[in-house]
Amino acid sequence: MSETATAPLTGKTLLAKVKELSNLPRRERAKQCGYYTTTKNGQVRVNLTDFYDALLSARGIPLSPETPKDGRGREPTYRVSVHQNGQIVIGATYTKAMGLKSGDEFEIKLGYKHIHLIQVDGASQTDEDSDEDLEEEE
Image 1 (tube, rainbow, N blue to C red):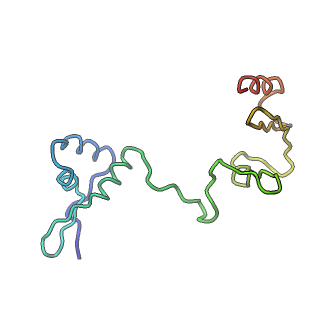
Image 2 (spheres, rainbow, N blue to C red; image 1 turned 60 degrees about the vertical axis):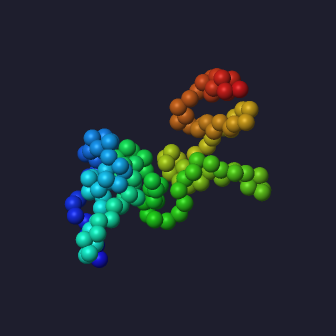
Image 3 (cartoon, rainbow, N blue to C red; image 1 turned 90 degrees about the horizontal axis):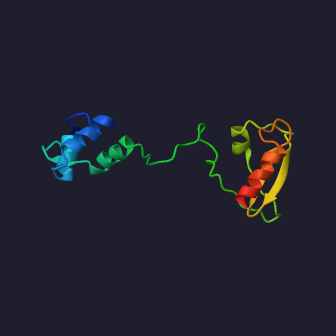
C-alpha cells in the first residue's frame, strides 16, 4: 500500500531539526523530519498526526496515560467520594503503594475541610508535629 521513505526523527534530534526548519510550513517540516509515506503511485502523504505526537513526546508530554502493569483494574486517581453508607474507601492500590499491611492502625484528626490519617506505630510525625500542621492549614 504505502511505505515510509526514511526513519522519522525522534527526541532531541527532532526538536533540533524542527527549530532549524522553523521558517518552513508545518507540512514541509514534518516531511523533512521523516513523517511521510509514499504510495505506489509515487504520491507523498505527510503524517502530521504522527509528527505532532512525536513532538509532544520529545517535549515530555505523554498523550495517553500509562496502563496498569497487569492490564487489569482501574488506575489510581487520588480522588475518592463518600459512599451512601457514609464510608470513604481508600483502596488497595494506595495501601500497596504506601506499603501498608492488614492491621496497621491510624489516628484520625479532623481539620477544616480535610482529614489527617496518622499511622499509630512507626509514624514519621509526632503528635506535636501533626497539631502544628493542622494549625497551619486552618
